[in-house]
Image 1 (cartoon, rainbow, N blue to C red):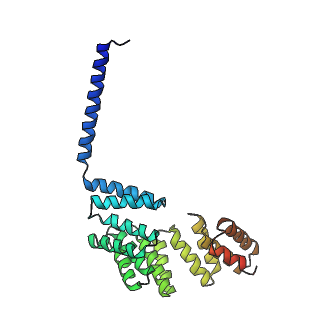
Image 2 (image 1 turned 30 degrees about the vertical axis):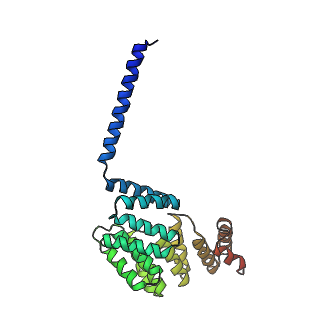
Image 3 (image 1 turned 180 degrees about the vertical axis):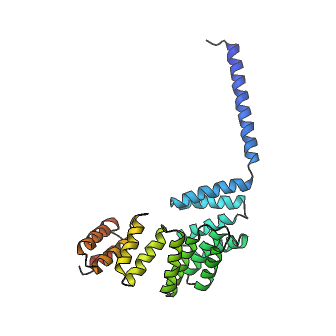
Length: 254
């Protein structure tokens, strides 16, 4: 058993350790700059955004901006978040702020270009996306090519859309959004075997969406494969019962 004197010395020693730890922590906190804190909060905000925890994501991203008001990536991410919230005017404002701070950032150019095309400002949107493609440090050009393809679809230029989707797949053969778009284009062009092939490539890298299942139903029906068409139909109804695609196959003549 420890004597009272020993206990006092032990308490003093523990207090010294605690005080030292507190001092060390305070020094460590002081050594972390606001920019570093902003980067950390932005990273957390991006993770919450991926998890669709939008309120928490917004708090973290706005904290990042309060710590570093010149952080273009933070405004870019906040733009994406406002799009998720269907607050499109606010989203556009954030993208503009991000552009003003860093007009050479491929991610910002890609997001804002896509956003403009979705608002039917195709000329401005495509211009930004083409600029993103030629950025020297853009190693993911397939994002911009796919978004240009979707812009061209919005304009009604199917040939230009297909060229861009194929270019995206040339850069990344497993990019599922471009594969999905090529499935649709092939089906609409009555190239049913091609549509099936693009779907197979799509499923090699990700799972069905309601849209890919709907096109699979129609493709197999066009090919005369009633059993496979019905299988896809049942999968669509089971996996996405509330989707508009499910409603369409419910009312379609079988």
